Length: 353
Image 1 (spheres, rainbow, N blue to C red):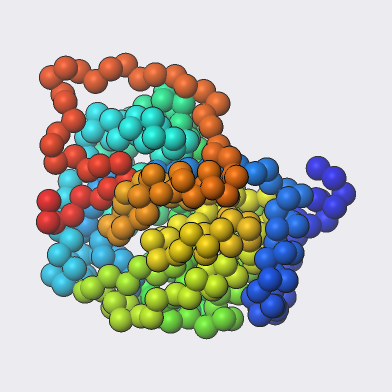
Image 2: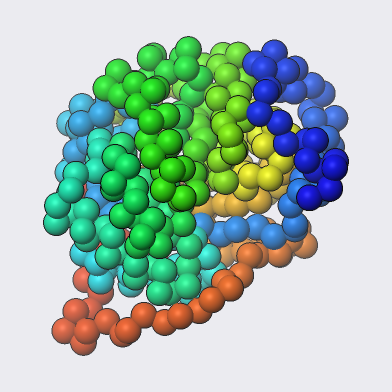
């Protein structure tokens, strides 16, 4: 790492500094972010596929989330059982064959509990590693010994978002504290697992809250390896259903500020992409985004179709990150075909199915 690269990686960002970034003229901000990006990143885009392996019934009251049991009667998202290992690995294989290099699995749990279901998730992680893919899970809070077990299984990354600033957090969630989120991240870090941690904009927060979120991330030592930036997908039946859609330029600003404050991190353009034009996507990539969720669905909300994503990346002259290893899983047993009701690549199972 050069002296310039080293000097740009800071852990002492202030809210005022980040507010100034977010308020800068847009093109100036994007140019600065692109300069930082070129010094720290290559020109590849990571394609990550996301599958809901256990949908609905979550006891948390996150105001944005249709998987919360608190809003189930209004959202229609019913509680479902954890998927079987073979079904998940079939989806992972399909994702890999479609070009994804990271397979992310989400379970609507408040916290990880030791037992048969956690054993099953560990087996999924091991199987995805045998496919040569990176694995990432988001399972809620977990304890140090559980993080160690996931690390031993080969887990690459653990997603646990901060969601928003510490100051605005209580307006969105009451069932889990900010400190509990930080404690989970500490357990993940201590186990040697990469951290995937970001947040959501468009929930009614102010500019200072957006800056506060980025400060909370950029003052971590080290920075999260992956930083997903999400725009609220307002879902009917949730408390935030009537929130105004995020302005695409606000996404560009958040991505640019994330790139400037966390130069070596992979910045992921996440939820809300379906409302972005091709031109807005291009600006996001210019601002420093170098990862996207790829496939047909993003947990319980829509995501741009895979072919459109691939065409956009090709049209922009960017490169798709490729697998470094390609170790095949043993074939699925002939008596265990992919069930007809098994979700498609990246698709969450919903009550309507």
